[in-house]
Structures are given as structure tokens and as C-alpha cells.
Length: 313
Image 1 (cartoon, rainbow, N blue to C red):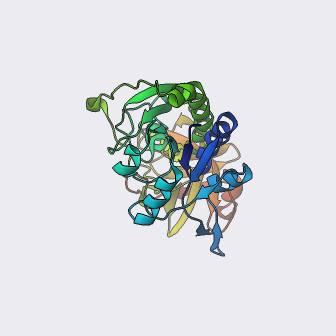
Image 2 (image 1 turned 60 degrees about the vertical axis):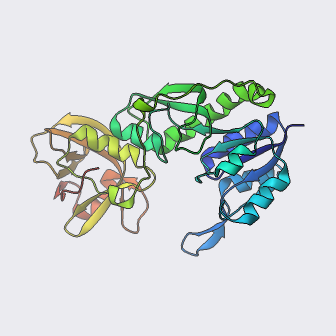
């Protein structure tokens, strides 16, 4: 019987694990160690661990793939095939070479576009009109391995990174289910990527959160959608900040860039191109996410604020 390992940690990997476990025996699940979270800093298990335990699957949580203990553990499991989804580790060559049927990664982009840690975010930031999932064989390079299959879907103006990633997780499960028989039989024939067409999607950072209202409105709109839920986006004015959690339509405006205007008709931020972007959900420090007009109540039922320019991406 083929011995399969699954490697992944966050919520986006759970649909693939659940579907895989319903189709074939999973001999081992690898995920990140439990980590402290929240104000109480209590240890919290990765979503994949919770899902695996609920399915009755054995779970392993190595802290590093560079220590001999991890290699000894891996070798002891005598595995044939590995499925990887958002695991977040560079896997060593010895591990990839140990699998007769290979290690296969479900990557959330249409490779070779958006190799790296944050493909969904960068696709929205850049204004791509479609995104998808690639089933690729892992090799030591960064998402550079040959691709077996892809599925694509449009990016709509309503999509944010969090919601789109959740949808793509279901697409990833379906893509693996379609090609799992070939992986198990060893008959999969992936095709090399065109490295000349590759683009990179590096990790996000906290300093990307500050919005710059001198940029075009469409850029601001995409940035808010792309950086949800982390690092999020924020407006700064007078030593205070407002997190922008959701945006809506664009419309022309005569107001100067950086003017935040609100009244009964809504809240709008004037951008650098004569357009304004609608602010739908905001969050004040220490408060929950609220509809924009409710969050702006401390400054009155209507008014103007002037937002400071921040760094662009």
C-alpha cells in the first residue's frame, strides 16, 4: 500500500487534507509546532493538526528539517508520496529524493507567475484578472518545479485575499482529487515551467499596512483587498490611526488627495487621481470592526479628516 504524508499548517490546507484522507490512507501529517497566540499567549495548535487529530491521523511537528532527529523520524516512516499545501518550510533535497512517487505541492497561483509565499496577495495588489492553483512536483528551487495541472478562476472586484484563498483551497482539493490516481500510480508527467515568465510574491510585512492617499483610487482599493487579514491597512491622521477593513466603489471627487469625507451617504477617501474610494468597514484602536459611519462617530455624524501620506508598496 502506498504510504502518503501530508505537510501543511494553516486553515487553507485543511480542505485538501480532509479530501485526501477520504480518498486514500494518510500515514503521517506534518505541521508546524503549537505556538502561543492571543493576549494570554496560550499555546494554539495549527488548524491542520486539529483537523488531522479529528480524522484520527498521526501528527508530527518538527521544529526544523536540519536536525538529525527529523531525518530519522522521516526515514522511519518509509513514505512513498508527499502532498504539500502551505507548509512554509524549505524542504531538504534528501527528503524530496527519499520519495519514490515524489513530493507534490499545491501552490496558489498559475505558475510560473507568483512564485513565493504570498501569491494571492500579490495577484490582487497588481490587478491580475485571474488566479488559480498549480499542482507541481517539488524540487529544491522556490516553486520552480514542473507543473502537472492547473485550475483557474477570475478575480472579481469584491474578492479580498482572505476570501479568495478560502475559495482556492476548495479548488486545490478538487485538483488533487482529479490527479491523485496518476500520482499514486507513478504515471504523472509534469511539464517544466518557463522560468523567463516567472514573477515573485515575497512575504508580506507590517510596514505595508499604511495607505498612501496620493496613489490612484484603484490602487488603494486593491491594496485594502490584498492585505486582508494581515497586515491589514490603515489611515493615519493627527497621531491616530484607523484600520480599513473593507472598501467599495470608486467615484469622481473634487476633494484634495487624503481627504476623508463622510455624511449620511457614506465615507469616502479622496485619492491622488481625482477619484475617491468608498470606505465600508473601519476599526478604531481597541474597538471591534464597525461600519464606517459608526466608526467615525467620535468625529461627528459628518465631517472631514486629512490623512497623512504613507509609503507605497
